[in-house]
Length: 238
Length: 54
Ligand SMILES: [Zn+2]
Image (cartoon, rainbow over all chains, first blue to last red; front, side, top):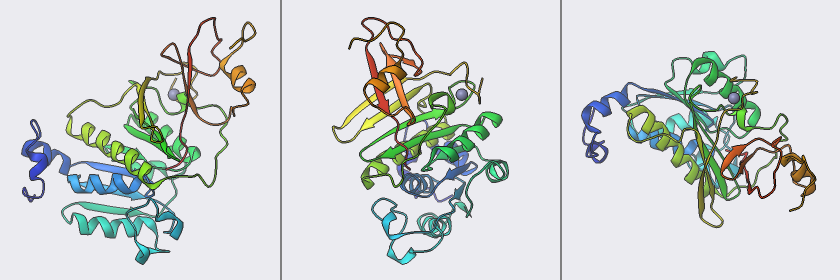
């Protein structure tokens, strides 16, 4: 480990070399390398997470570039997971990065995520999010959920049975909106917060946003943290 | 707002012509409730849309 690289975080009270070494032994599964995934992947790589598994089945399109700051015009039409791996390898060659050009579904979720210490939900639809959620509930793996749209977003740290699962919070039927409007900087805000939740969990520092949801309205620059609780009739976690 | 006795958050969404099939978080008097919660006099309901994108 190059200590100079991590000098500014090693200075944090309670962090030190042992925490940095701990991070270097962790594996994070990042589901989605889009608007949320871009800041998540950047910050986790920069922090020195040992292994990043980047999962996305899409290719880079020109319409992604207002928010997906992992990519440039040079990567158009490249698989996102592969392009993200290239970018991150330039940022931090000390870490191990795996590019998974797959769409997470019920048939592959166990194989894709097994062995990860935490899952970060950077997906853009609830059908796939619920697959991640089912895995997280089944295995007790923590899941950092965020969503972003227009100029607002939400964040919560899911770790059942201590917290509600994502399904507890959702209606039985969801109609997805596509394409979703978004200001790129809003994805930066919410993705940055997701990276914070993952780093706090992996280092044991700070407190995760468990049993609460942060709701951010960037249009009026208003933050609220509201309580959330398990649905006793939840078909996934109850 | 005036609502019929036994009206739920879902009923209010219908009255306000808000979609029921998009994710939302509800708090009633700062406690998290589901859409089938039966509203009472003087309840203070907040409706927070959950973003769908990533
Ligand atoms: Zn649940």
